[in-house]
Image (cartoon, rainbow over all chains, first blue to last red; front, side, top):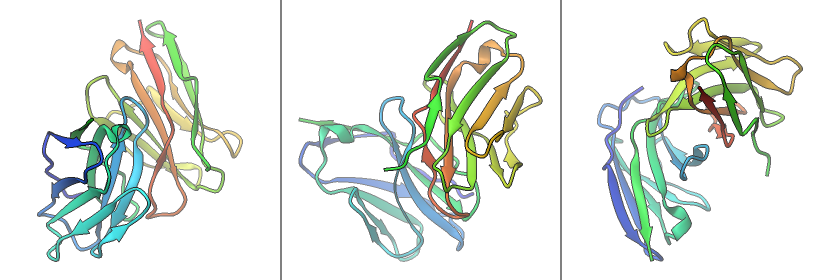
Length: 109
Length: 113
């Protein structure tokens, strides 16, 4: 599976949109972009995934560039409960998820 | 909402003892996984399981580890002779189809003394 690069940490103001970038310049054509988060020491929580089109669900939006070499996860209205480590993972169908270091997001009041 | 459940939430054991961690995956899921996370470190893949056999395992998953789906609902991870370095949070996950997202349980914290 291709590797990803994410900022180590970022802060966000409560109520504002949080934009989390991810670079995956070596992504293959059959690899999806997945986002998970881990709140404190809880189990990782699935957020969203996509192949090449932008995706939106009740939690977030995923914007994938046309060349698929990078993506952005958008939390539209961050709350204090969104404080977590966010993982961007590229994964081919059926392959295991491989977690990196992620981005530690701190939502501040 | 269906969820993956894990027991125990915390287990303390002596080095050299056998430990069994249990997981109940989401009921119609077919793919099962174990991951672990040593305190302060990354979430690491251990093993995946499908159709009653291991489909992939990592270098961590040596002969001391085994998995089983004994009764069609539980999915267990056994560590035969625990070592201090096995102290970690162990996460079970399941997915419904080949390419679907994984759903994780809340984890079992193992402390080896």
